[in-house]
Image (tube, rainbow, N blue to C red):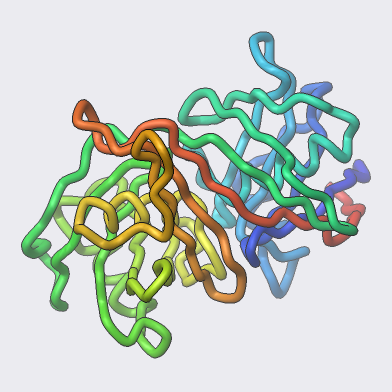
Length: 279
């Protein structure tokens, strides 16, 4: 039996277990990851990440959902990984993830919390659906890939909206989104920004925030004609975002060639605890 140290971080309430695996010695099975992330029988987290060495960049981020599935990017996880890398003594933040290259900057440090600005992938396309086959609820919305697959719906009364039952129905039953499925985001614009709530596949529940979903929601908001919070010189737009409890922001350059280029996600990343577990 081996004792392994994990570090718990949270980004806008989206929480993760992170381990330093630059040695490459830590190998975790799907079952071990799911057990560690279990909130009743394990430590508890929305996901698990490994900081690994990269031949090309400063490090590599390896991400797993709480059910042990992987192969996608996580925006809140990316900010937490950057905060963890800084706490490990890494000073530059160019890194590789499942969806390719990312870069980041630490804008501020306040106690255990860092404000991280994370470069996301460009959004190449957006697909609009009048309805989704196989879904028993109104499902008009848009599909985008922001490093993870996302479906975005605009609703009213979002604070009281039952996103879990409807999100699960869309995530599992929408024929157009199968076989991989997609996270389902619900967006309500307000004067000065947008509110976003997300049902996450792999977690199979609502999370307090979803970074790639927030990016997808902001890009979809621009395409829909929702007024940005700010418009800067050169056409860069910014949306202020209210998640479950925290505030974040997304800024990007609208592009005729794709949908959005030079996309950045800014928000908190906070160290929570050091945890030793027996594997």
